[in-house]
Image (cartoon, rainbow, N blue to C red):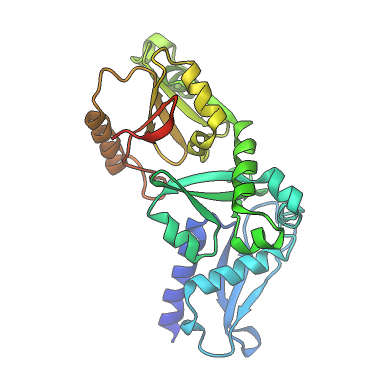
Length: 289
């Protein structure tokens, strides 16, 4: 029994980490009722408030996804972050604070099993999250679940529209040379990539910025900077996209091979977005290779 609980607790916490939960779970049998208590994280937690997910029978018989859903439901019931969870309690606050997130198509089924609201964009998965207060090193987030959306009468279309409008205000679009210079303090000539046609599309905080490509306004901005009337988009990770205004130097298959190589060797499974290459032109955005 003890070993099964240990395995279950590890799986529950793995799901919580993957979904960006600002808390972890800990098994408890306080009061003779086995269950899981919610343990919030971060320096700004006002006080440790515990919400137990109890089960009168054998706790190990509960699916991990059901335990996670119950923990999220319990989390929304408490003010764990000095008011930040209030962003989840009011319809307008949710819509004003919601952001979109792009992830790989393989994540869609897993997210839906956890009750998270999802959509599809080309061969990628769209979900939504609300930033919460965290400590100085980590930004905690809460995913928008179907239950929370239903509670506030928020449709998928409304979540999509509001989140895209919010992320547009966080746009960062810089040349690869500028990005390297800002990170290293080097002069452009020292980088070895001065004059590179590569641009980096991300959010100002560099987190989950690939979702900016969902915005039609952002795609139009990319096209305005292209003399050819088209741009090529390479999914660097869930955090950013590389944009090429001049793609004549590479074929679609060469670009796809580059993306796959980077994904295989440099991007973690958690941050991997897609092996595809995309084109944006006057007709919209579609898979190029």
